[in-house]
Image (cartoon, rainbow, N blue to C red; front, side):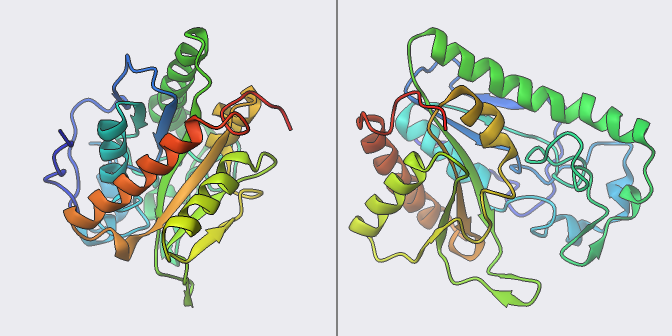
Length: 267
């Protein structure tokens, strides 16, 4: 059975427990899906970071649709996943701990008032409360796979806007990678074989620039890894979200069975 559609899709999610959500915690199915930008929730006490509700529903606050695709892949494949419950504007899980945009003061030309001129102590508090628990959950889950003798494919699930800084983005799906091309190139080849989708190879971003989560949890362990980016206008309803999840589940299932992909290798 597929996970239910989030009833708060497109709205601000008010969660009480802000620890990361671990999907299928006991599963050792050969894939781990990590979703750092699953939520647009700003915790109580942060006054919406000075933004309106409408601004927090925009792409600057989260990767719209990424949570739903992650949940469905994990349900279909019976594999594990991790979802952040805090907006990327509070602290961005896909940034190095000292990155200048770890707590962004601006996103897509929108100023984030509460993030301007923050003292180091305030940034450290956000990291301790939200950033560190997310990455600790990822570490524990992946280490559990390795201890069980499983080499997991580590997948980041993101979405991207059709237009950024006035530039149209024609790709319908993209795969980011840094030094290890195995999983990204395998998935690109399979999707191009099975569909007519316009696929981006290190597009709309480059894995050489934005790859912290995959580097930390995948590459440093020699595990095959890639970040998947799906264009947000293609994630507008349950039916198409289900289709994306089914496509990616099929491709990941094939990748798990390829010795040239599902093995430990350091680059």
